[in-house]
Image (cartoon, rainbow, N blue to C red; front, side, top):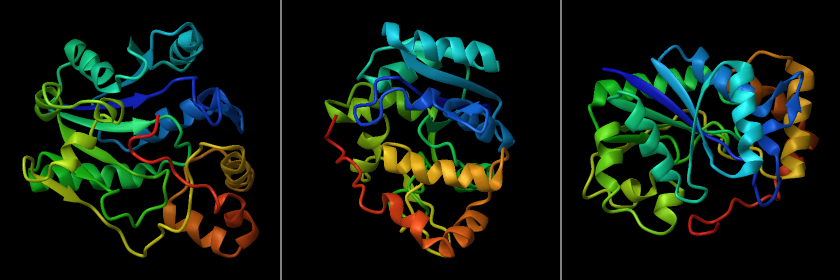
Length: 241
């Protein structure tokens, strides 16, 4: 079984433009996501899926610099971007990543891939019943299912790639992976300046290497002023651009 990782990345974030190429401890945010995905040890191949917009020439340049393949496709139809990658790569399984998760934990990625393989399902996600911090989620899907939903997904489902699958659980074999303890109260994704302040503090303390989620959570538990930096930030709804 061939496992392909796809990282969606673009410069045009509405709340924090250019966030994927901001630098954290000498690396770009995108570089950190690429490294964490590779460090999981479960991928046979990895591709960054960006857009055809001129602003994303910078993303393509960064991919060349750090040695990861890059595919370019539509801006808002991210599902088509993913399917474009699959036209150029042979894969049975796809792990979906987003480039705004610089604290991605490779061990969690590996665990999700193992559970998916053992369960033999269509789709696995850690976000249906969230127990992980936002920003550490993992999604695994059969490549054949991504191709199948191309005929079914519409509107925001094409932007969010997999949302049609988990919105129609009667049509697909879907499982939600949870972990204990429940750390869902933490926000470790990058979408606003306050998110940036928290993530910068984490990198300043722990250094260059990826940090295990429990280690990170234990440290933040005794740094409540840091965890409070972005506690007010609300995630966009599924149908918001």
